[in-house]
Image (cartoon, helix red, strand yellow):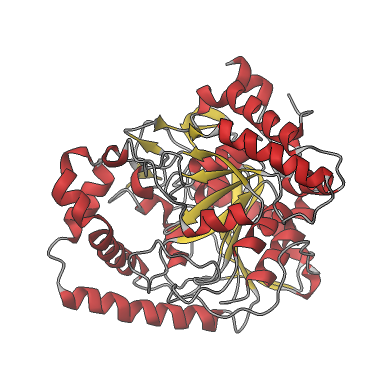
Length: 480
């Protein structure tokens, strides 16, 4: 296993060494590029690159460091951007043939913010078309493979980012999450991501501004790395209708909470989700192992009644707003997920849409009441082991046929609808040999507390060989 290069440093370690002038941004960038060149052809995580410009930036960052200037929080850290965010001068395809040759003239809001914070944006990471679906597969770049088994899915839609971080191609990468696009690939690849309370990280890219869908978020190898990146993404922007003035909380250097003061609820399926029997048994086993670490522990589900129908209706509404022009002008270039979801939306009655919005409000209120009695909810992130990367989605779970391409990841979109903050963390391996992950869910706006609990769990898992973060074998990937 290759684990001795600068690219193998965590983001936090690399930034500390840069701050002490013990690591050059040029050296770190070159190491990340070398790792990409070594294994990316097998995995397909990185899809477009900007290496020459990145090297010029790294040289300027190195001089800035040597000259003793004050450095931005992410100064010198190579960062990959999910191919749904526009990057000035760097091809952005959205995973769609409609935009195969699209080179934006300016950065999206979040990309601009990350650049100003010192990140060196040097590549784009793969995503399903327009982020639709939880398998990173599209007709422009093909499928991204799982670093623990390259023939199986890496999840999605932030799959390229998760694979790139898991294999140390880069210390940090962006992701986004509507129905689980940060959390699913984080779980399947053994990395960390956070889906924040909507509005904590402002977005100017959502066409439906008053929506829980489309939350931008950070991905890192561990909780500290993720939180460091989150700290520069969080701010108030008046142009995001869900944004809110925040207090002075700092997400950098976040400390673990004392779990003995935390009341936890465990749920294996949220009361409605299809979960593979092997995953269900594994979750029960691991939660029974850690439950004594908490002040109190109970098994129970939040009341998510009607969430399946609510999610489908609201998702269809989002698809009409997002893809009407694509469907009408370029239907022949669109993949099956976009076409089937859009066509399901056409003609949906206004009363059905109104019902879904009303029910979402009730689901939100019931979810907040759930946290009157507990501080944290923990559940699995993904309910099935990774399937073939060439499939759009698994056809069945425990013999039950999946009705559509989103049913299999209901553990994540079921929690999108109420919108509570969630940190996804790894918890060892699942029975077929790929990473297993947990969702740590907390009260609305309690993002810092949720991340602190996730940090405490990560520290606890690090003491147990069966629970600590899985690491892919880079040497084996190179030798394939």
